[in-house]
Image (tube, rainbow, N blue to C red; front, side, top):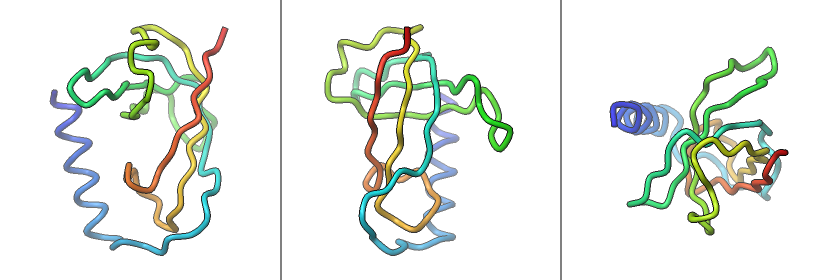
Length: 105
């Protein structure tokens, strides 16, 4: 619960600092491997913890991601995620992000 509140506060602060940004065509922002650590049933979000992060990021980053087929994900599942955005701002704004998720073996 504290993580969700912290992420929300950070998003609110970042959105206030950067403004709405410019809307552009969808493009790949970044990719990562993650493990499902929690399922938010109310909002149908999965919480992923990043693993095998490149040097520019650190392992352990957590991302809340909305998914269409919520029931197919289980805690402990390993996935590969491609994050696309349509804004010039570097913020985690679900209105400007879309995700392509594939299971890892």
